[in-house]
Image (tube, rainbow, N blue to C red; front, top):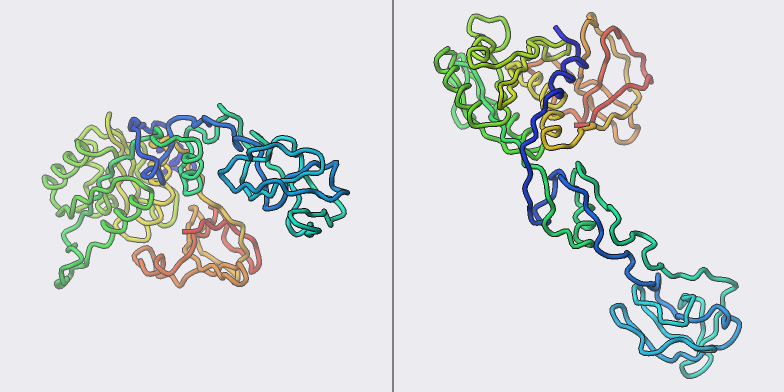
Length: 392
């Protein structure tokens, strides 16, 4: 059995990239850049007014000034500013030649027809200078950046309308077990609905990869062999839930080996989710996750998701918050790292463990806002102690 850190290192040690493609920047949200993005222009491209006001010479601030022209954003002055003159200017417009200051409208008063006077005591130039933000040729977004909404604006501003991005892994999701029926069916005696398959497919989509739900595999060696062989041939990552513990029908690891899967580990010291299997073929990675839905949910978050991002060229760093416990925490065994579903109180920032009946209690995760990370060897935590929490 490997510990959490060892398992993650094994998973990430040989993450295969999926190639690259160019996409329209409108479709680049939540993709990973496969190239540096450089600006093709200076930003700002010229000295521009930072606010509505009057462009003038600082030397004339103590005198009355004649307004000789008005320019809007996008327009260019037809004349320069001379001694005793100013030009009415709007935010974003190019500052006319001769002017070195833009005074705010609020700091002026009219003293005659198209004549103003500065009423302030002092003023900054109120000019956004050419190239003070970005110079032409500067890198504005780096390779491996995970593209968010604010990055779309940056791509737009530099004309990067067809950025090069990493291809997304195709991820097969299969559930094992004779006891499973699909969600639209009413379970018969001894049967349950398949929640894992659709939960895991949704987690794949939330990781911005391509989910390929491949259905339920019965507890039959030949059927399991055929399903795994097909999934490995058609996908970059395969996720199976169930069939990996010590029961009579839990033969997934055996079938993996039959299909040339090199097993990296078959047990990991985490709670929930100890019977987690990971392996690789020449083409694909494969996870055998426990059938209990809380285990499969958590182990996807802590093991599968980092691999998917790594395959897209992005190092996944989950947000870890230090948050105080609202109540004391105790546990009888501390031989494994535990990820415990918790509520986060938005008013106090405190966390409370969700009422939790074990790894089959999927509603515990459904009501949680985070996972509290309790290291191995820790038996108890007092109220008010700050603990690591990963929002979900």
